[in-house]
Length: 206
Length: 206
Image (cartoon, rainbow over all chains, first blue to last red; front, side, top):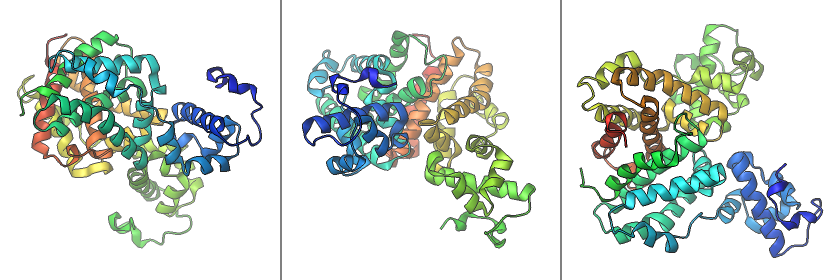
């Protein structure tokens, strides 16, 4: 049922062990991304990921050590901070809240729960290793490059408050699918969320 | 290890099947609350809950039908809407954001991940049945009584936006434990979050 999203490698028979090497590793990562997104971190067993990739489970352990190692290798951050930061800050501090809301809502609306940040948020709710990975990714790829450029007091706390609203929106709109929030238009959500992010990132300290 | 939090019922030997009836049911619910909070919804198996309660797993199924049924019976909403709504609205619309932020942050600071709303949020990240239960609880015990009294346009969407910030704060401060957010003082968090909730609940439509 999931083969429709697979590349040409599906022509290879999907049983038995494949020769080691780059393409096998890539195939395991593709299977892991797919099953983590479909079933969540706990639901996607190593055995199921190996079967989806057409390899022995032992080979998955050989390449990635553990399920947490596989998660870390499989999650691809959905945007490049070097590309996005200049866009977020195109007007300096002004509109950074709106641009950040737009970046997340647009990416999530397009990718839904297949988005790797949502995969990580769902996994992090129950798995400390996934929580640590999410925190490290957010910090390295989002907060730190953004807050370095904004140069405000209490930068880390501000960034985490903004992330708390984004995580909550991700949960409520895309994972829990609360209605009418889940069906509201993208522009309406951005209009509501943007001033919150703007205040957290650049507003007066309370 | 968990017996320190148990009541006098622990004097009863904890092996074998107990006589059916009210106290056995109550003991299963106590065990379920404890293990759901400690291990999450997926981590707390029916078998482990039965063992903690000192009963056969079959008896848990007999009383509650399924794990989802047990979750629904075990989760106690941490406040009574009939008691809290008049307090939230003590100044009418004014300060409802601050009072709501205070209610959640104070309850969560005191109870941490043992708080049933956080248990439900964590479970809901991966379990559709828990997500439905969380949505139904929030609607019946929080949104509907609150928004009926506020009488604003787009009441449901406003309530869900407020909940999205609260869910995100719950995740970031108490589950993911992002720092410095997790260690920030309660009053500082309330000061940051209150204007967000106030705008979502009573602010001008964008």
